[in-house]
Length: 445
Image 1 (cartoon, rainbow, N blue to C red):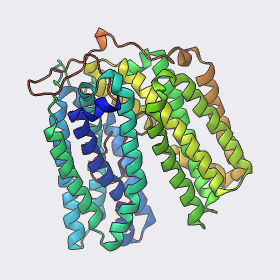
Image 2 (image 1 turned 120 degrees about the vertical axis):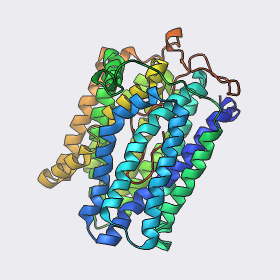
Image 3 (image 1 turned 180 degrees about the vertical axis):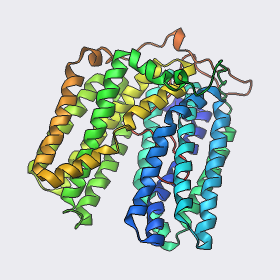
């Protein structure tokens, strides 16, 4: 399968396109709040960047899926890249001239999030026509590995460039977006837009992906428990660990250890997934992830060693990444070709809906009850999620990967010069991190 993907020209181009853009995204994800702190000295205004981005993503995620199913996806991706380049270019000019008003920074953050909500579903839909079904698990793992690497390296590079000159990380992202645009333009595969009667943004269209997920008990149960419950609890767990093991913010070494190990765990999981074939053992992996997170939360309540906490968080993230890759393969194997964008957006929407509240809940519990009680409460929430995933018949029923059928075949035609399009290829989506972006530009799957 690895050889097949290496010989898949369009997959390589899409992978490289995402690499250029995600790396730039991660560099400016750190540089953008640093820029606001440098200009205003206000932590509140710097924090507003993340709030604007998350809000914009949640508002536009479902409409973005509709657009990805109605517009030719490769063309939409190119327009998104060019729009991202214009947005970042405006910020480059402002930083270079030394005048960076906060409204411009917030506009850049919001525009980047909106563009990303359009780009992500379109890219996943196009991937459905590029990658054959037998390669889907490996392709999804490679996308995850690419993103995890960018998250590990990007902030460090962005911070170093910002130290040299504030304009450099934003200039680097603009260059990356140009390279991404070139890669997308060279992709030969096309996907046909779906012409349907009625308003594109009617209630039926906006909720089509959610309705599809709700009708399948396995997808519904796993997304509600693993997507909503686990994302919320794991966000609270990692924030609590970061706070406790950094001594309430007094020690950068302890907190940095936890953050670094989490990134390493995500990368390790993405690299291991192709060897483990997680699509064959999805239910067991999801259940194991949930129970291991329970044990980790309880262990951190009693053992106060930053390295130990970092290793536990890394193992949790590694298991979660492998399980997510298996679930994504199943999700898109059963998704009709004309609904890929809306289903991907709906899954991402559900997964990210409560994610921002996890750290808030962890902080409130820490303030009110202390670290040991907080870890115990988080372990309780995780245990409920683990029990549902382990014993619910609907979760166990989907543990075997579905066989591709004619009803799942994509409706995308192949142009004369396109790479071969498989009969029934699923596309990768992410139920764990729908958007990769908290600053300018656009996220990549």
